[in-house]
Image (cartoon, rainbow, N blue to C red; front, side, top):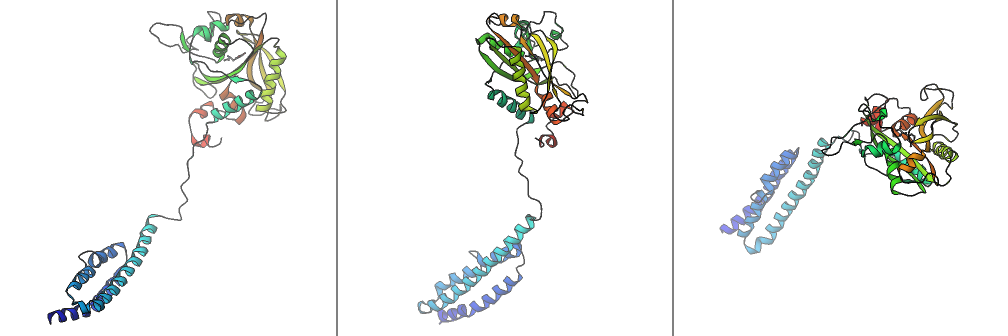
Length: 347
Ligand code: DAH
């Protein structure tokens, strides 16, 4: 009899529990109240599982009916719970993500304008058959000055211009002041024909200003073979400048002096911006100075183990930052080293 009554009471209690569940469900308004519902009804010791556990006490013949009723109750509770879970999960996500905010940008890096410029210079000379050579930044006096024909008392050797390197056993080490030192190394190690450019960092004891830096890049060029003349020098520099700056440029070669070239020249190109009329980039002169150059001095060839009676050649050199400033109209060289994204993004 007691079995019967307990069976009836379980069967009777099921609709009452369902009413209770429905009432509780209707009060669920957020993730917290849903969690309270779960803890009350859905866990191991919660309302539903307690009823299921009671099923064991129901007589065998009544189990199908009670079990069916319990299953319906459980299915109802689970699907109502899952639905609410879905709804309140979305509420939480909405609260964290404001879909109206602008998307976060992807901050991809880019190639520095100086590197871009060097790459472009190398590409153009490579298309004319020049290879790229490299040399040390800590040099000795012989490669930076001596073999390039600088007299022992030449002012460029002065402490004011050159950074000397403290060394326990040597007193002739310095930070190279120009890439012309690499010319010497290439000529010492290679017999002509030589046709290469030498890009690299150079160092000078200069006060940093809008026009000057204490370290900067140069590109050096060297072409040595039998019968190389000033005409080859002019043709090469003009071909480069027409590709790099301006296809319609005019040129003038002004005589100049460098200890390692004879004759020496500086090259001016008509301003690519104003075509010679005068503007801010060319400082209203109509001309831009693009490089120093000359025929390699016979004494320099001899110093480097090349016979000047058989071979001749030309060399040139220019600063990369100044080149970039001319191209872009940047009027403060320091902007190229401050890594200000507002500047870098423009390249
Ligand atoms: N070395 C020179 C400088 O630093 C630039 C230069 C001039 C290089 C004439 C050369 C050259 O090879 O022929 O100002």
